[in-house]
Image (cartoon, rainbow, N blue to C red):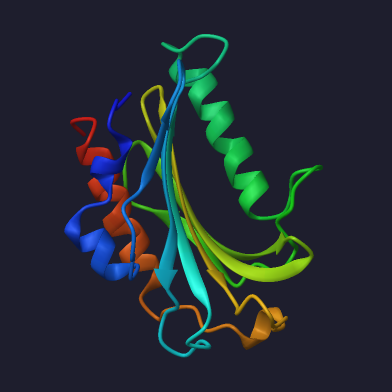
Length: 176
C-alpha cells in the first residue's frame, strides 16, 4: 500500500488528463487515495468545463492478505462502474467497456454517472494485483452554470489507452 499515492500522478498522467493542480492524498489502514479535482476539459468540450482524476489503492477489509477477497472486491468495483450494482450512482449508459491486460486482472469502462443530479461521463479502470485493488477514475464535468446532457460530452478518443497507461503508473508505485 503506497504511503504516497500521489506519486502515481506522473508527468504523463498530468499531461494525458490535463491536470492543473497537484493531487491531495488520503491514507488510512486499508486504503490510499489521491485526487486531483481540477483539470482542463478535454478537447471537444466546453472550455468552461473541467475534469477530475483519482487513483485509489485498497486491500481487503476482512483479510488484507487474501487474494480471493481482493478478487471479490474487484468484481464489486466492476458491478459498480457498469451500473449493475444495486446501490450505485453509475447509470445504465455504458459507452465502452472490456478487459485489459494489466495486473492479475483489469477492466475498463466508460459510463454515465449521476453527479449532483447532472449526468456526466466517467472512465473507470479497476485493476487487481494479488491482494491489492486499484481503482482509477476520470470524470468530465460541464460548466458550473450549465447542464449539458450526457451525449453532449466528448470523451477523448484515446481514453482507454491513457487510462491503461495511468494504471501502469499506479502499479509501478507498488513494484508491479
